[in-house]
Image (cartoon, rainbow, N blue to C red; front, side, top):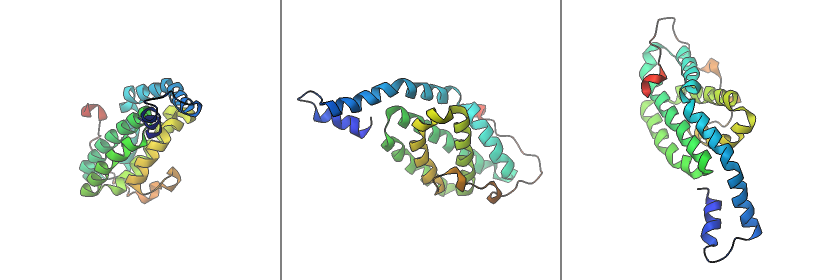
Amino acid sequence: MHPSIESVFNEAETRYLNTEELGIVSEYVQSIPHRLDIYRLLRDEEVNILQPVVDKVQKQFSASESKRIERTTKNGILALRACAMAMLLNDENYVQERVQWLRQTQKNNSLEDIDRLFYGELEKQLQQVLGTDQMGLLESVFDQVRSALTGSSSTSEFDLVSAPSAPSAPEDELNLASFF
C-alpha cells in the first residue's frame, strides 16, 4: 500500500479521517478500477506485449548471445510483473525492493547492453498497448526499473544504432510461451 495511504490509516486509528485524509483515500479508491484494468491487461497480454520486444532484441544481437537474451527476457518478465503490482498497490517502494535483485542479476550476467535495448523497446510497446492514460499510472514505477537497469530515464536516450548488429546467421527464435 502506498506510504501516504498507509500513513493516513495508521494516524487515524483513534479518530475519524479529516477532509484532506479522506481526499487521499478517495483518490486512490477511485483509481482502483483503472488500476485493476491495467493489471488484468498486463497479466492477460504479457506474452503478446513482450514477444515483439524480444524479437527486436534478437534481431540486434547475434545468436551467440541467446543465453544473455534469455536472462534479460526472464528479468524483464519479473520487472513487468513487479511494475504491475506496484502500480496496483500504488506503492513505488514495492518495485524499488525488487529492482535491486534484478540489478545484481544484470551485473552478474553482463546484461547492460541488452537491457538498454530491451527496456527501451518495452516502453514503446507498453505505450502502444496501454495508451497515454493507462501508461500514466504505470509510468513512474516503470521509469524506476528502466532507470535502475539502464542508467537512463527516457526512451529518447535509447539508440538502436549502439546495439551490435546481429550477423545474418540463423538463430533460434526465443518464444515466450515456452517460459509459461
